[in-house]
Length: 122
Image 1 (cartoon, rainbow, N blue to C red):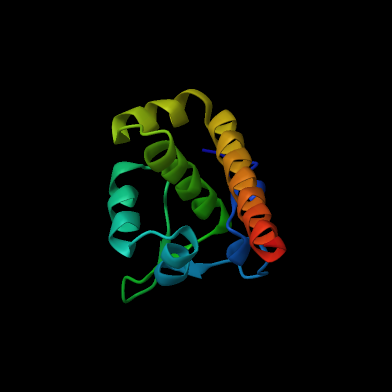
Image 2 (image 1 turned 30 degrees about the vertical axis):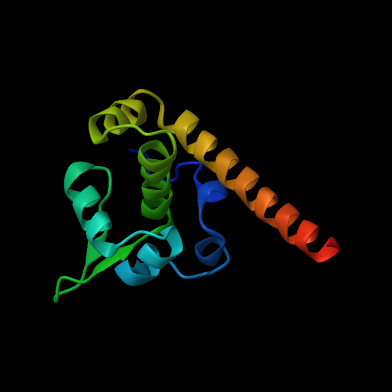
């Protein structure tokens, strides 16, 4: 897996806006709205996720790792893929799947904003 994948559009805003290079498992889990145990499990299942670990074993994720996690989240939670199906989709065309995840995320944010505007107009 390439180091600089085109995943910047699929990053959660809380991550994309920061200039940090590494994010703790807690920050990553919160940004993705997933339990940390899911991140640890996906790390075992998807060999492309390689967080750095300090001497204590604490995990730190790069923006690239988070983009991959976001794509896995999209495939499994939104599209309903099994883990094996997500692995196959990522292996066949990661860029396409990452772009689809980004588009769905953008549309979801637009929908939320429109619902906020609608509530204010009532």
